[in-house]
Length: 61
Image (cartoon, rainbow, N blue to C red; front, side, top):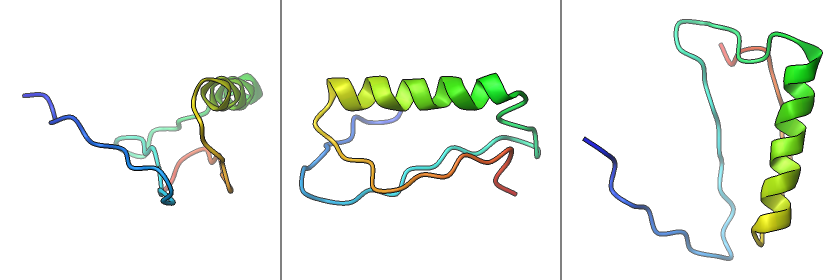
């Protein structure tokens, strides 16, 4: 069953995270980190947002 659509309200700070299942590594190679940075840049170009801080880790355990 899909999740209900969330309403995004501007002017607030959001804590966003992505976590792997079963302690799997999210980023396996340096290129994976670079691809993540590219996706963040593309999202910032498309959407009116600021990224205040971020941290890419092999796994958030």
